[in-house]
Image (tube, rainbow, N blue to C red; front, side):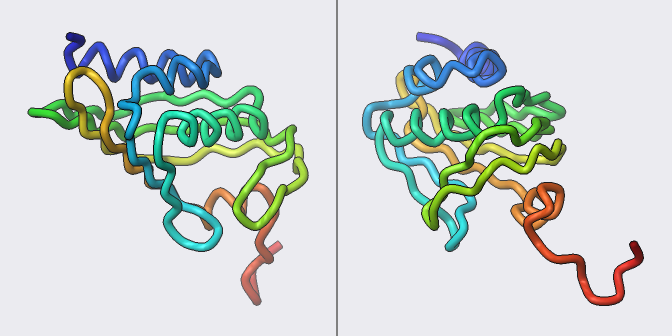
Length: 148
C-alpha cells in the first residue's frame, strides 16, 4: 500500500499531466468529493464524477498547473495548500451551464483536504476563492467606485 506522501505526489503529478484517469485511479470507487460551485458547495460522488470534474478544469484551462506550497500528512489525512495557474482558453462547464473561454490567465490559492483508506481517497474537500477566480476571468463587475 502506498504511503500518504506517495499518494500526494502521484496526485500532483497526475494533475499537472492533465491525466483525469490517473487522478480517478487514486480515488476509492465510492469517494465523495466537494468543491465550490456556482450555487454553493457541490458534491461529486464516485470516481467518474471526480474524473469529469477534473477533466472540466483541464478542458477550460489547457495549461493548468498546481504548485504545492504547504503539505501536512497525518494519520489518514492529506492536506495540501497550493497555487493554481492557468489560462482559460476552453469552455468551462458548471451546474448553471457552460461559460465561454475568456482568454484570461488566473493565479490563485487553494486548499485540498483528503481522507485516505487502504491507499485510496475516500473523501476530498477542495477550497478556493471563487470571487477571486471570477474577477480574474473578468466575470464579475468591478465594485462601485473602484479605480480603473
